[in-house]
Amino acid sequence: MRTAPRPPRPAALEPRVPRWVPWLPVLLLVLDLVAEAVVPDAVAAGFLLTALPVVAAFSYGPVLTAVTTAGSLALQLGLALRADHVNEQHHVWVYIATLLSGVMGTALSWQRTRQNRNLLHARTVAETLQRTVLRPVPERAGGLRVAGLYRPAQADVLVGGDLYEVCDTRFGVRVLLGDVRGKGLGAVRTVADVLGAFRAAAYDTPGLVELADQLDRAVLRDAADRGDDELFVTAVLLQYRPGSDCVEIVNRGHTTPLLLGGGGITPVSCADELPLGLGHLGPADERSKAVAVALPPGHTVLLYTDGVSEARDTAGAFYPLAPRLAALGTTAPDRVVSFLAQDVHRYAGLLADDLAVLALTPDVP
Image (cartoon, rainbow, N blue to C red; front, top):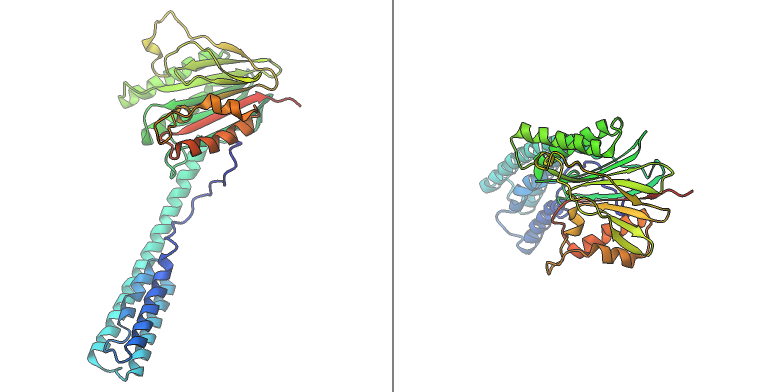
């Protein structure tokens, strides 16, 4: 999937402590040595080193924590020997306290390392499952060049409530982009269900309207299973046959697609349809219709979710999508998507909702 030029999201990494934490043991050691130098006859020479193993446990592994314990004891003995206080009772108790601190610190370090491994495994499994739900779209499919962007509002997740898919079928290229009502794990489950239904039906359902109806029934079944009468998915479906000069679009309550080209930005006029999962509420004798939209070479159709159109600046103003794209002066899908990835973020600062964009244009050799 072609996206904006941002660093690729890494695979799950082991949780890391802040950069300043590993320096705490060093700071503690320096403070103790400075105190020893300033007050050379101090009774409790090396007393600060008692906490050193526990502090080290937050940053280092059990072996290094044990080594830190041994080093702390050796340094305490050396400082006490320098003051000729090795066998004094309070120093003996300091040695014992340091040893106990080292045992506890080593145990804590082992437990932290074990938990980090388990968390890393869980994150890896979660990322694998999420990437399976939202698969990368191809750069080219059935005579179309495709560029896309997906950015959840929550930085620590890969899949939110937006969805997309591109399938190259015997009926042509079929595209789905949608937005699930709600957030959290429930929305992710609906995303997975809708994408599964689309991938299964896109290859065998002749008509685009019939495909939308199948997705409508899939969302309705999902709502019935959950007992959620308000579950719905706004979606736009697109179909392009190789060699054609137009695309078919069915809009089920989603944001209006835009056509870029010909020196301007034109909203694609579609019938006002109910979202997926709410189709049964409309008149039974009125079926949705696909709208044919001319898509000659050099023109791009842009599908997007309300994470773009409803992004706001600090003053509460909505992101001016069409004027921004008009000022860009290009219809190349990769450049359009790259521009939006940076511009929406600069405009809105923090995204209030998930963001998904697909830009498609005829692939001219």
